[in-house]
Every structure is written in structure tokens, then in C-alpha cells.
Length: 249
Image 1: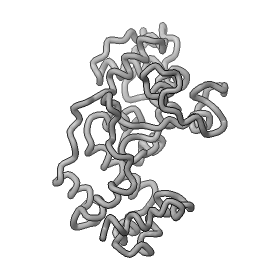
Image 2: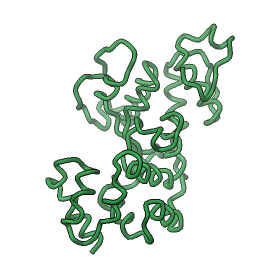
Image 3: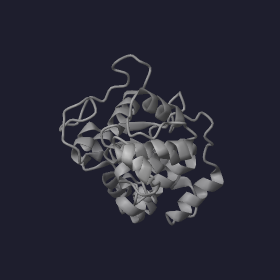
């Protein structure tokens, strides 16, 4: 069971699923919801979760904050971090309804879960089904899949999403300085700065690309190492190295 917020002995004696109850208690404490902490993840819990994570007033990153991110990466100005943001981001970090962007990966949940494996809308051994609103209910499908997966295995669910402007996987929550991936998603909900901090921490602590980042310039060949490390071996198919060079020209 997750340790950041502890269930009382009384709560443990009555809840159906302690890990789900922990999420309910976390939401009450951090998002001001008023859920019954019973470990039953039904319609009310899913709805409260989605409402809690919507934020249309999250502040944009400032130029001073962006400069600090660049300095954390060993740079002296923001040209490179601006270029990476231009090429590697998914535009705004939020959906129109205020939810931070995320991509739910059903195959990662299948891999991560410690519960008995069942093929569901949100759980499958193969990647795929990247839809936006398959059931036409005005809920983004990645968020809806996450909301259902929480009821099955919350930790696996939050580790199986790519979060925010730079789509950093929840499984890297410790490398990004969080004690639990729900906190990583909550940070992305609260400010654009958090999205850039996740990018920084991914570059430094996960992909080990700090020196490759500092080598970025307007020569596309000098950008290949970063593009490969960030986008994978097939980076050239989408010309990421060339796009970075253009952004830095």
C-alpha cells in the first residue's frame, strides 16, 4: 500500500481495496474532494477525480523560470530549451477542458499491474487503441481509461501514462523527484513550470542526455545524438535532428 498518506486502522478494517482508498483519501487531502474512503472506485470517485485534475488557470512558465531550467541543464541562455520545446513538445500542456494532456498506454498497465491480468479497455498485452473519444461521451479516452484503471490498480495506472507537454512517463516519477506518480500528474495540473521540470529531469536522470542537449546547434548532424536519445532509433524518419537545427538557426 502507498505510504505518503496512511489509512487508519478503522479505515483499513472497512475498505474494499486499500490502494483505491488511499487515492480517495489523497484526493480529499490535496484536491478538496469529499469522497467516502471506502476503496470502492465507482462513478462518484471517477467523476471527482476528473474534476479535481482540471485546471484552466494554471500559470504559464515565465522566461526567468525557463532560464533556470536551462541553467539546471548547464546552459547559459534559453535558445536550446526553446528549440527542444518547439520540436519535442505536443503544443500546449493542457486540453481545452483544463485537464493536463496525457496518453494512456494500455500495454504498460498490463506490464505494470500486480493484479490478475484481464483484457479490458484499459488493459491489453499489445499497444494500441489510441482514440480520443471513442464512446462519444465528451471525456478524453486516455483520461477515461486512467480513471477506470485506478479502480483496478492505482499505482500501475499512474505509471502507465505519458504526462503533459513533453509526455514524460509516470513510471519515471522517482527520477522526476516525486514520491508517487499521482503527485507528478498533480504537478502537471498546477503549472507549466512542472512540465519543463519533468523534461529537465528526464534529460538528466532518465535519458542521460545533458551533454547531448548542450551540443545542440544549427548543424543537424550535431543534433543526432540528442534526437536519437530522446526519440529513439527511428528519429530520422521524422527529421527531429533537422527540425532542431532549424529551430536553432
